[in-house]
Image (cartoon, rainbow, N blue to C red; front, side, top):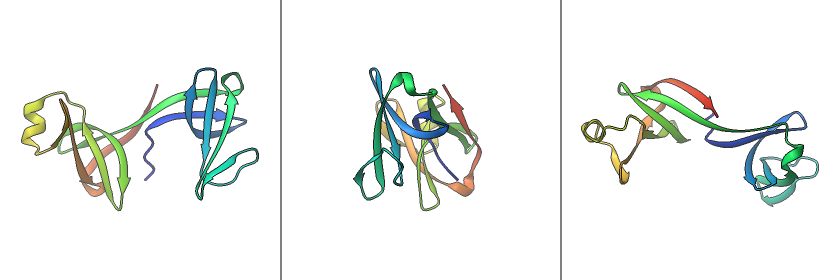
Length: 122
């Protein structure tokens, strides 16, 4: 399962993780790609003008867990880090979610327990 959460850009026919910065976009790759500069052993970056990007969008992954709506923030060893998106503090408390910040409730959910995992693009 691939969990995506953040900006993505299509440049020269390939989609990359991205970070917009004014009239430029930083593109990220996990392996060496022509023109990309290595910044860590598994991270490469290339900065291009925004006008050269075919499409820039924000992707979030959503799911249902224990009958309630969540945003998936990440994954690790068969677990998903989920954030409650239902907006009802009593429900979050009933589910035993961790209060991460004021009004923000998160938990680790087994991948086997989540349903309706899907992406939404803005």
